Image (cartoon, rainbow, N blue to C red; front, side, top):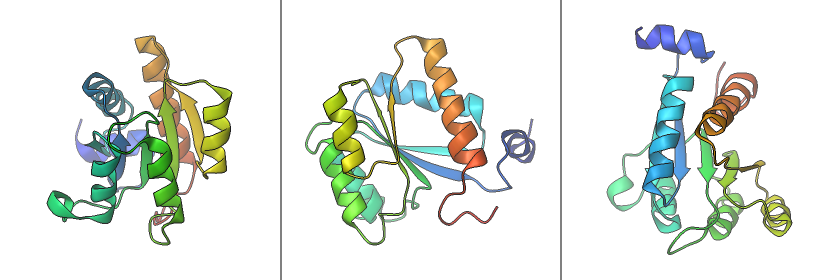
Length: 157
């Protein structure tokens, strides 16, 4: 199946979708990439392994000078060097970056993490399922809502 058919199948109106995944676990990053590949062939998943790299990607500095502005960010909370809460704060306080929707995707189901994330203006909070099938299902639901149903800033569909 070619890219145009994949995009049609996934509901994306002829455009690639850039997602920044901020995740320090190489296994979880690989799993997320495979799940999106299955859910939507139009997704280009970019991975930052910590908060500092995520901010460099978003600000297009250093080796990230030519990286695209993501349409959506999937953010883990527990990260090395700069944790997800600090990344979330920096993004939402930035006039240019603040409109990018941010989904917290983390192992924590703690009420304090959920409340704090929404206080910091996260757009959604999801706990990572442990089971592989459930994880694939969650990624499909993220795709179905955020990339097919919801209108994202800068989308022309």
